Length: 427
Image (cartoon, rainbow, N blue to C red; front, side, top):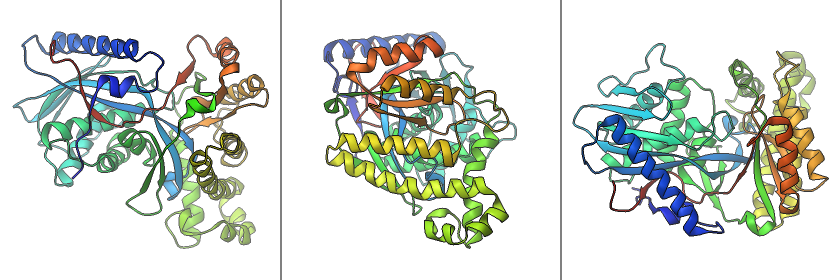
C-alpha cells in the first residue's frame, strides 16, 4: 500500500516561490473562501471538513504517443482543483463545483448510464466503480470544489477532477493508502468508458504522481520515473498560451490519431505501434500508403521519432543540458506540425489559432527558447519555454492577439494528488 500523501499549504504551494509567506497566505485565503462556499451550499453545521488538491499537467514531450504504448515526459503544474469534503451516511457522492450544477451519484448503480457522457456524474460513477473493482472501499461523501485549472487550456482539467475524486475516496475510506498510479489507472478507465473521451493515461499519471514524470506505456503497468530538474535554474519560464480555439466538434479528429496509428500496427498483427519498429513501416511504406493513406503513415513515423525524443529530453534534463532540451522541444513541435498534423482540423481550415500562436511565439523568441503545440492539439494551447529576459515582451505580443491573461506563466508542482492540511481553526 502507498504511504498517504498529506501536505501543509506552505509545502504544497510556496515551494520555489520568491515570497513563501505571501503565496501561503494567498492559498489560505483561497481555502477560507472554499469553506465559505461549502457552508453556503451544504449548510452551516460545524462539522469538520477535510481538504484535497489535484494539479493540472503539462505535456513536455511525447505528443500523441501514450495511446500506442509509447513514451511521454509530463509535469504537474501549480494550477489545481481543490475540494472541501466530508463523509455522509447516505450511499451517494454529492459534488458541487463552483459555477456548475450539483452532481449526485448513488453508489448502488455504478454501470455507465446512457446519455451521461461528458458529465461530472460520469466521472464520479466511473471512479467509484473503479475503486470497487480494484477491491478498494467506497462510501458516500459530499464535496465542494473550485478550480484554477483553466478549461480548454490543455492542462487537463478532466484528469485533475478524476484524480481529485480518487484522492478523496482514498483518504476518506482507504486511509489514503491507494497508490497514485492505481488512482491514475482508474481515472483513465473512467475517462474512456464513462466520460467518453478517447485518451491515453499520461494526464492522469502526471496529475496523480506530481513533479516531472517520464512514463513508458509499453506494458499494461506503465514504468514511471521521476525526473529531478529545476527549470528556474535554467533562466526560462514555462508559458502556456491559450489561443482561444474551441474544442467543440473535434472528438473525431482526436480519435483519428490513435485509430490511424493502430491500423498501421494491425497490418503487422499487433495492437499498437510499440510492438513494431520504424523500419517495419519504412520497408512496407508503399503498401501502407495504398492501404491506409499517407497521413496514417506520417503519424506512425512521428510516433517512432517522438519516442526517441522523449529519451533525449529526459537525458538532457538529468544532465542539466538545457540547450539540448530546448532543441528537442522544437523538434517535437516541428514533427507534430508536419507529420502528426494536429495543429488544425482538416474540416475547418479557416480556423488555425494554434498556427497563429506558434508563429507569434517563434517571432517573439528570436531563435531563443522553444515552442510547440501543447497536448492533444487541433485547438487550444501552445507551450513555450521563454528566457526571462524576453518574458515581458513575449507575454505582451501573445496577449495583443489572444487577449489579456491568455499567456499563463506556470511553475512545476512536485506533489500530485494530496490531502491538504490547513489551519486547525475555521474548518
